[in-house]
Length: 245
Length: 245
Image 1 (cartoon, rainbow over the protein chains, first blue to last red):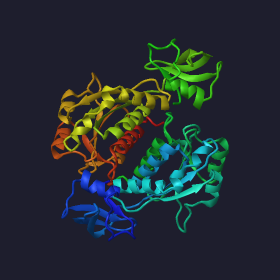
Image 2 (image 1 turned 135 degrees about the horizontal axis):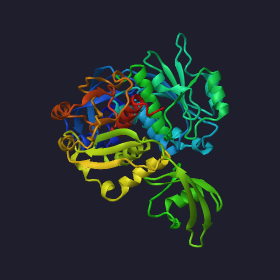
Image 3 (image 1 turned 90 degrees about the vertical axis):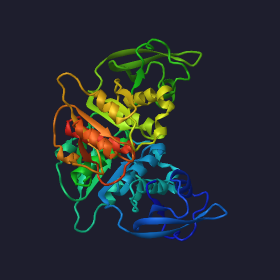
Image 4 (image 1 turned 180 degrees about the vertical axis):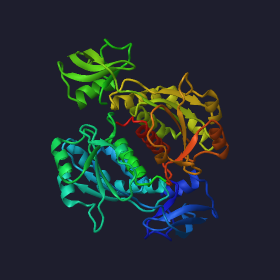
């Protein structure tokens, strides 16, 4: 937690004793009344918070002075085959810390159907993971998060389509690649990254991707966990569009 | 676990009922006597195993036919500031799955001293994490793992030095970078990557690195977890040396 993030509607209300942000401020950062800390409003500005008082019930009052801009968004949308639930949380956190514009979770032909039945998404855990990633990167913006039952529906919906914008469409594919990320070379502008489940894409999905305009690029010969493959693909793409400068 | 890995001295002995490989073969992969599976010997070849019998005590006998070569090693050595213990396991697993030649864990000026007192290293957990990463990538080789109390001792020891080999020395540094990974361009040959603790390098460490011939490259403006930063730096370096093809 490199920045304490607040929901827009909770600022001004004291932080309860049980709030993990209270614990972080008092126990990890060892802050006392009068001390300042890095703060931000989700979807809003960043700046400085100040602890005003510790109240008898263990809650904490604070004031905020937020006038800075958060880091720039990374103009990358990732469509990711549902990973194991235990990986999903870390995946969302990591892709959020990289500032991705959107993460679409996709059912896939070779993915485990059961992975989709995760409570992380309905129970608020997914949003908590996205917030954790943003707090790591001192960001206030979260990736848009959407679910699609399969690749077909994702490609039909084309959530990346927007007036006057033609993102480069890339699918990670170690089995039948057409090239490598190194062949991309530097470019500006948005990118869409499709990363399959750990078992990769079916040939049916490869056809769908090809007809939708995706180029298949290899991440090497090693089988990586979905989470690692996503971070790898995102970082390679970020480098190409100058988002790592 | 994409491949079942055996220690050189245990082949031939039955796998006990409680061994996680037994559970993986029987419960996750649903293998039965007569079925084959991907197998390898740590530090040796890869090939096919065959379940011969399930014994009354729940253990499993098998035969191995191993004649293949594991994937090529990635000629990268990483020197990494000690992360939080909870991250260390995942870091070792991920860097092992990327096939790195060596991982050196370094005390650093801005790292938490307490992180070094981890039982993961003495208790066999570190080796288990390296094996888990190798099994993910269908590899049989593990990165060499060494500990150094500080950057000074690492640079003094120059564990990367070997007759006739001059690796490119790169330090990840988002605070005072001299360039970005994009400026590296494609090259062949080995690389050494120094990645600090999450709080980065002290100026004293920057001087040490500079005098030892390290170039400081940025991974962007976002503060990443040590684990994510290491995977990012490793993948960017792997791309440059053609290890992702």
